[in-house]
Every structure is written in C-alpha cells, then in structure tokens.
Image (tube, rainbow, N blue to C red; front, side, top):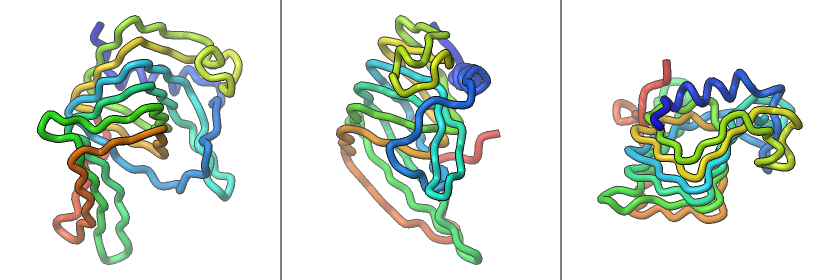
Length: 186
C-alpha cells in the first residue's frame, strides 16, 4: 500500500489528544533536519507525544519508534547561525549502498515528507498498546515494515540503542557553503 507520508503524519497530529509521552531528556528547543534517499524500517510504531524543553516549553510531536532502521544517503543538518554569520553543521553517512543503521530508534518530529510503503499497517490503534506511557485513548498506528523514499524530516530529538554511521562525515559549514539537507517544508 502506498501512502503519502505527509498524510499519515497529518492524521497523527490532528488525531492526538494533547500528546502522549515526554522525551527521556530535555530537548534544546531547536529543530534539525534529517534526509535520506531511503529508510527501511522493521517494527514501526507511531503516536502523538510531547517534547519538553528545560524551561517547561512543550512541543507537540509525532513520535516514531523503529526497532531496526536502515538509512541510505543519510544527511542531518542543524542551523547554528549567529547574527551576521550563517553556520550549518552537517552529518552525512550511509552512502555507496552501505546504509547507516539504528536499533531501537525513537524520533520526536514536527514534520515528515516522502513516499511511504507500509506492510501490515494498523491505523487507529490505542497508543497505550504501542507504548505504556502514551496518553490513554490517543491515536496510534503500527506496521511490520515501513519503507520511505526521499525522506525529509524535521525533528526535535532522536535517540537509539545503537546508531552505526557508515562513512561518517561531519562538517561545520560557514557562509555560502552553509546549506541544510533540504529547504524548509512548505
């Protein structure tokens, strides 16, 4: 089944009732972008949640859990500009057919775009069946497998049990070279 990822993410945001789960750490309040030519994930679950900043600021998020994820041509960027100087930190990995790999991946995201195929998807589950800390009666969905091509994600936090970045390249880009992984979503 082909489902536009933005429609699925939109349904989650509109369907959640005030969020479900707090991140296991305080988020910075700044978002970052993650792009990949393809994400292949086994054991997918998604539901609404809240990311908390240290000062108490709350951000509604879509929480995605993936038991085992492979990311091809991974790009992560953080805009760290200061007045008068454009600065973007980029991390690239998972190229040349050797994907970056994450186990126990947990993502708090603001938006997601791409073309998605879900295997054995269940939409409209009670989120507490997916995560015991989720808000009771809130919206959730799960699938045995997810494949997203042309992934573009804006996230607040990511954590994983293990995250192997094959071919890791980290770079601080300044001025005209300070470009993020993709333009801001519309």
